[in-house]
Amino acid sequence: MKILCTAMLAVVAATCAHAADKPNIVFILADDIGYGDVGCYGATMVKTPNIDRIAAQGCRFTDAHSPASTCTPTRRALMTGVYSWRQKPGSSIAPGDEPLTIPTNSTTLPSLLKQAGYRTGAVGKWHLGLGGEGGPDWNADIKPGPLELGFDYAFFMPATGDRVPCVYVENHRVVGLDPNDPIKVSYKEKIGNEPTGAERPDLLKLKPTHGHDNTIINGVSRIGWMTGGKTARWVDEDMGDTYTKKALAFIEQSKAAPFFLYLATHNIHVPRVPNQRFQGTAACGRRGDSIHELDETVGKVMAKLEELKLVDNTLLIFTSDNGGVMDDGYEDVGSLEHKCNGVLHGYKGSVYEGGHRLPFIARWPGRIKPGTESKALITHLDMVASFAALTGEKIPDGQCRDSINVLPCILGETTDKPLRETFVAHNGGVQGPFGLRAGDWKFIPAGQPGNPKAKGFKAANRMLPTPQLYNLADDLPETKNLAADHPEKLAEMQALLARILGK
Ligand code: NG6
Ligand code: CA
Image 1 (tube, helix red, strand yellow):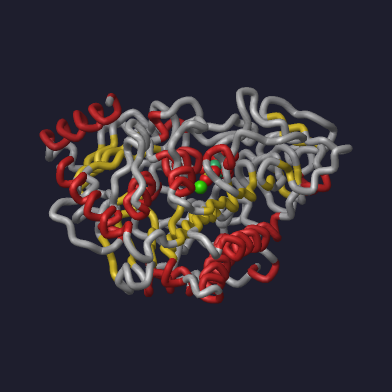
Image 2 (image 1 turned 90 degrees about the horizontal axis):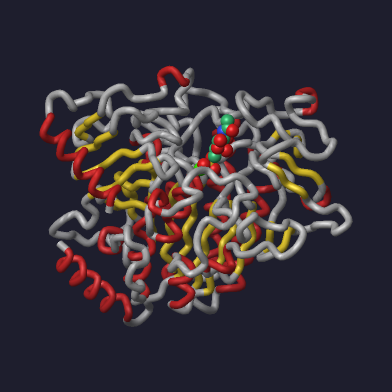
């Protein structure tokens, strides 16, 4: 297998090092978009003509997975090509004041592409921590961060829309900060005299359903406490437009050389507060309105590539950081008739398929056949090795160890064997929860939470009482637990997971 892969890598590197190669790469990582959230994966209550167009002009993957079912561990794995659970600390959802969770001497997606001669830019949600030990100083140079990991340019929110500080950072500095109104952030205790959401629910335009009762920013209570930075605070309704504008500007400024744009949208994470022009446009409420806003962003990026005549020379990928979720803490859901994860069981935060099997669509005219579908098992972990193969770069020994070159799958080439044979599903944390995929089989150990975001989920029924074994070939919704019927397969999967985790 190893020999086969190495040989393949050499062939791919050789074919790709010539002529027009080093295409621009635009990687759009949506937030919390599930397997059933876009039209080309079966959604009917939302309209996503632009995202669907990428599929019509490219390849739609049906077995693509985020390396984790929450944001930070997925992004860390995407950036480094290493499962987040191997990297400690910081393998769970990072608070807004977490120090940078990736060592600056790591080979990363942007550092590798920068080495290949790309101009690299990050726009949108960061959520990988900032600053050295002790975290960032919001009122000075905020580093290390994206620039120290290989991005030439970065415009981003530090954590999530529902976590403080609610400000944008451009390269090393908070945008629009008044030095006379310095920012302070705490995740331990209340600071300052501003009322919290818990104290003044009457000030809220969006009601929390659980959590989210700390600092109120623009009528929405967030997680964590923040004072100061009043002139720098974002307006939720403008966030989609702000990121889109910055993404288009980056493309415009980078058009002369190969560029890599990592566009990590805030849509459709909570709080779901799309611009007024989208409010009420979807048949399933606010969450759907945010999907419409996301689709417009994608359309604008596509239009910019067309305008600059870059379409043929750009590999465009659209995917998500974890599975869909309906109620994630605010009354911003809409209709439950919309099935965000399609037929899959589980939501964001789960090691069932709904937590991590996602839309993944790739377009590169002339290289990827339009309107195709791929059943190959791939994960965001594989981007580093695949882009290294694409650009003819070599990954230094010991780096990106979980990344597999799946470029042949992305380009629709047939391979003798699956390039990726196993995948460890992960929620967050060094201790899991985990799940294991091997071939058609999926195994989830007992004694860990199955589906924490399910409605009515209680601490009492948190832990799966028995191991779960499913055959996804004929049971994609994970409804028939075959553990008792296939004890040998169960033992094999148990041993395989232990081996991978222990490596
Ligand atoms: C959870 C938040 C949720 C979301 C998630 C992170 C509550 C009740 N829930 O703790 O709203 O922010 O963290 O999402 O506080 S992620 O996509 O960035 O991983
Ligand atoms: Ca997410």
